[in-house]
Length: 327
Ligand SMILES: O=C(O)CCC(=O)c1ccccc1C(=O)O
Ligand SMILES: [Mg+2]
Image 1: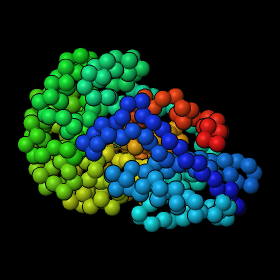
Image 2: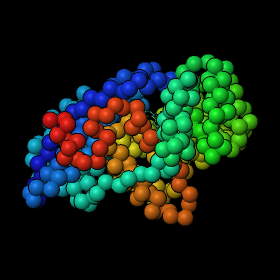
Image 3: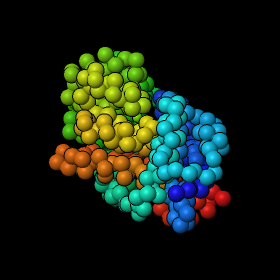
């Protein structure tokens, strides 16, 4: 079997910049991959790099795709350098989507956490999202001072119905003192805070481990486990908290599945602001993982990021139309 390989870059400007401890992010750049077989059937995949998390850059991904032959003669996915994890993910997904002839699956908002804007905007925003069925809300901290951010979150918790849960994400931006202040606040708001994500930078793993024993509020690793190798290393060092899985930058989804089959860790599949193409691959992955252990509870997926983009046609699941948008 021979396949025609094509790719098209995209640029998506956020409605408002995404502000995290890593800085301000204005435009999401990535690539949509298309594979067509001899019968004219197509599959799609996405490369969505996140260099500030340790993946390749957009330019490196583009270079890689430009040097691939336009005709791929074999259906096996090339095993790429570990320096191209987002490309590895995109290539494996484009083959899987063609071979498995997958139809897009809808993800109910109740099974999806949604990323709020910070400050006043979050107070203006949550009600609409609640009405749309979202129950898990994610909020970025570690950008301003602890006092100021706790003030906004007290206001937000004061408004949110009791059925809502909050995920806080510091993106590694706290020191130990600030992390303790936050964890005290989280423990006081027990039951309403699902977890605190990456309070400290990855180098402070020992402290993170100690904090996870001292506080009730669960801690999640994210920046610490940006690659499958890092994930495994933290697992073998005894991390038994939550793992945030940015599968789109973690290389081979198959290898991730093998690991999970052996070690069913407590994980959250999380977005890196993919289009609908990458999002479908993540939903598929989440279903495959959940089916391996149907009796254990699964957390809401961290895929509620679509509202950060304007209506540019890249959130739709009509792949042909989405592809045309990039032409
Ligand atoms: O995980 C989620 O729920 C939303 C996605 C998210 O927060 C995110 C999106 C892009 C880059 C980094 C992050 C992050 O978790 O730090
Ligand atoms: Mg995070």
